[in-house]
Length: 353
Image (cartoon, rainbow, N blue to C red):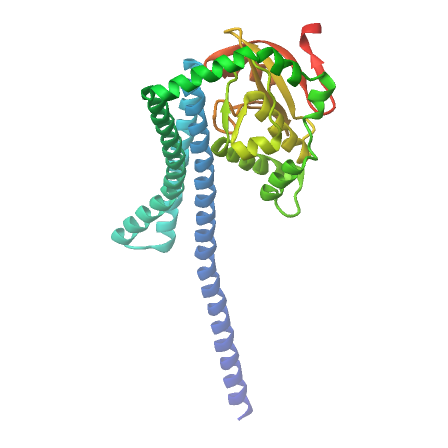
């Protein structure tokens, strides 16, 4: 009787042990493909993110080539590199898709459908980027057409032409008087870059995130302010030989400024956001005309911000400061030499060098 009971107990223990071992093995078999699938999805997401970055670089390259800030050989070389990298990413995505279909053991029709869905997901970021770029282009074209229409209307209107001529006569007659009143010393010009001005504070507060940190938030914040200026303020080239300064409040109120007014405005905002590298540069171009813009250094990259041309935020940037000045152009005119540079605290006359 005792022997039979012991045998039964041993059999039960063996059965239970077998069930446990089987359960553990089954559980591990289930987990293994799940982890592998999750890993493949993670890789695909990373690849698509990198592809989005490359497409953005391709877009910026197109802008630079259109503005003739890079030559044909450099454009071709960089374009070839970007296209090759994008193709490599597409191939890697296809490989991960094959892994997924093998892991899941789906039939051919289902696998093909998943393959198409994953590729569609990969192209979604590209489509969204193209959509954003298209919206920007459409807006710029609308502004361009609007300006053309306004120009056409003024040309058609004899009264408008006559008024402009009349205003030019008045300005020419009192030009010397205006220039004498608007003349500023170097110290006064530096004081105009006032980062503590109430108008500056008002604008910065609209775009500055809560808990703002320069190293983390500056680039994105100044990009938003730059684009706000580009869309809201009409920046003109002052060809009247009349010296005239607008303060920050007047610029916002009338939505107009010349190149040095807007450069001072933008530089003061950059200073308010703790950018100690921001400076206003006045340069001489190939056509013997002067031009003003803001130059700064953010992390390891130098930028020139030129709102007169209404170009994209990072149109002019380079890790090499000398190359930045060499590649920059205003309406296809290169810089012949730097004339002077200033901000709130500094002023440098390059003619004295």
